[in-house]
Length: 99
Image (cartoon, rainbow, N blue to C red):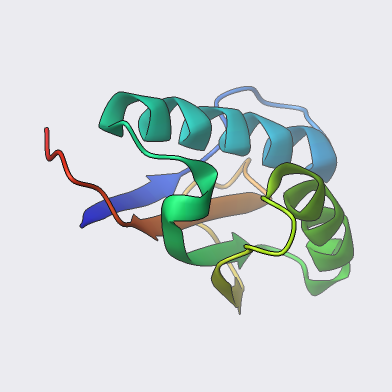
């Protein structure tokens, strides 16, 4: 089992879609490092600062996730650890190799 926590965007000034895409790119690099595929994500928690942004986050997530194999997701709304971030993601991943 791999636990990927507190993935936030690094670049300031992005809109919610750009922040979400950046996080998913980072998540993909972690999956690659673990030798896991997107379909190995068992559960994701998506932290969103503003409820109004959740539809945009979902659109980006749905375009990235494996069709028909999207993991369970839990949304959490409220202040984030990084004040300039509008979204953050953590994931639980089924992996065979632990780094």
